Image (cartoon, rainbow, N blue to C red; front, side, top):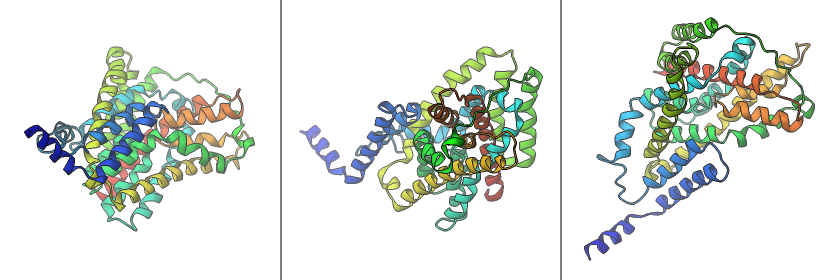
Length: 368
């Protein structure tokens, strides 16, 4: 009898907002499984959203395991920084180092951050507006670190927006790219010329870049430092087993914990609010403007270049690695099955990873 009364009490605690969050979690799980949209991100977030929105859920609260994980790994920025080691170990800077001008596209594709900052400032105080703007970095770990460092009131919505839109890059980017380019431009071929990059260059690059970024934006040192440390493990040539561990075991393990722990901030009473909807909208604007900025910058350069570039590669300048690079490559193949842009798009994509981290550091310098 007591058990029945307890179950009845739990049902009474259930409200429509929790049901809405179940629906949102179900949609994320559907996209992860059925549409194969970055399942390593969306599946843990979606299931976590259901987990924390059960009546009187023991997963959250003072002794809840998700709350404990959140305090231990996200509140102190540990999980995002450790994940950066894994991401750095995955990145091959070879295409970028063999063609350094691709770095320009990574910088151009961060325009959405500062455009969104101006828009968000209309509705939110400076620190919240800056935290929301960094969604445009298309980089989940950077978004978490910046929002935590600035003590934003909307950390949950910012984290969910950043990771959700990263996973939805294959849906968001193609319409924007097609709107801003002609079929003829999308069919421009860019033959890839393989230039040998010495191991010495590959080893020195992450070290020198960390020093330069630290001098320009001191608050970016942790972000860029962990990313470049992961890359140094990859390129040094004497830590192959550690590099493989960082790329696979470490990155996957932290991603699982990060995804399900993010859901700790998706409790219905906090998440379902007009401010959250506005943040999701501003995040979408940031992604669209980032994509447009990269494409339009490439079109601008083509006005002065004899050998034209395919403007689609500019869209790969957002930090969503490697999703953005893959999107551009697939779009090029769809227009012309013999047009291979993977290496150029990847070079731009990794430059966007660097640029987004530096942009995050600059935001922290301005508002921290």
